[in-house]
Length: 144
Image (cartoon, rainbow, N blue to C red; front, side, top):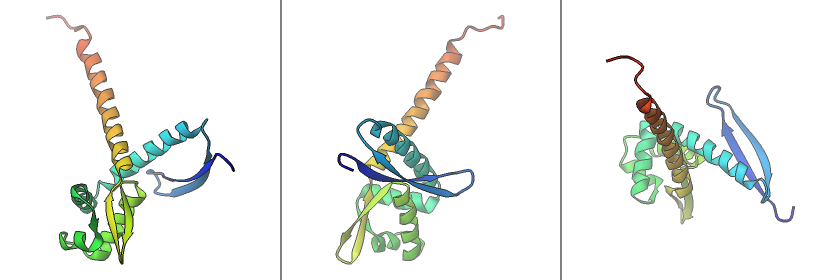
């Protein structure tokens, strides 16, 4: 369709662990709503992916700079195959991207995925601090 682009969206349902996929057609009128839904989905998947200590260690190494699987595996107490599986999870969560470099794939942090995590964290603290402020500023109903 002219003027439209297809986006494949993968949603992870945390309660049952199933994955549902659907193809969406976006145009200028509805792109914003779908973008917000994707950001929320990636942020939630990102927090879940970073819940594993090994994936978090891999992600922290990639924050320092791009690396190949073999380079990551030499610094971790897991096999190269295990590192590849962890990278697959991080990639599906939108936290890392890869590019071909000869026979290797070089992974680096996806700035959009990191921005989604940051936005979710900032939103959480904004709401939490606003609620705290409301409670603190309420007059004390108990007498001295």
